[in-house]
Amino acid sequence: MTQPWTTPSTTAPATKLLFLSRPPSFAPRATVTLGKMNHNEEQDHLDALFKQKRALRSRVRKALKAMDPALRSQEDNDIQSIVLKSPWFQSSTGLCAYISCNALREVDTSKLLSEILQNPAKDGHTQVGKRLYVPRVEDKKSHMRMLNISCIDDLVANSMDILEPAPVDGDGNEREDVMQANEPVDLFLLPGLAFDRSGRRLGRGGGYGYESWPTKLPFDIKSLFLSC
Image (cartoon, rainbow, N blue to C red; front, side, top):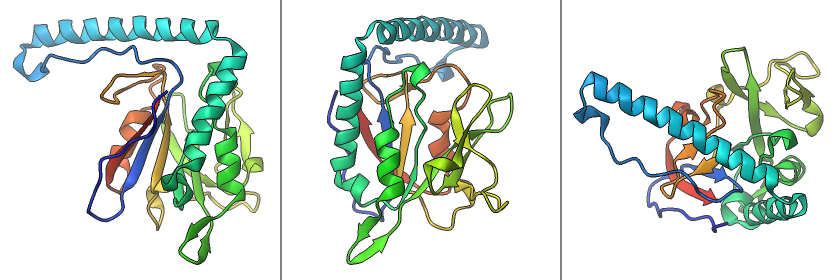
């Protein structure tokens, strides 16, 4: 597990992107530029890449399944402690984060979510509550939105027994979508099955497009944090 890092920036504050991953990095570096291939070569390369990703997912899943539960729990706690103690988490006021699923053996985020929802951020001498947006899958095509919640009770189990926010709150009002948020988020916590040394993400193949989310946000992402 490596310590988080960031590239210094002298511009206005930007959203920070944090990848959370427990297993070691297995993903190989890409060395071929598709633009230099003809159509058949591109298709062959994509087919080979698809097989490579499928094999890599299988390897990582087996490694996670074989991992001692006590060790996995300890590493989850270590990762969350690093995040909780970091100045970029403590000063953040708007966050997107995933709800961890134990059945998928994802890095646990329960302590992080409790901290976000229970404790305000400090902005100078002013107490500013943290805004939290979490994923909701909208349909069978894996379309996903990030909706605002204010407490853990806002989450309900979906058909796959994964917690997500209901589209409306207890008063019947639609939850704020991060895409329509008036204020930018300054931290984005993403799950990952594996990462390469450049931080490129291997997901679980569900098509939720976590890695493309930062490009959809109407805010700049200029800093990258890793915790692997």
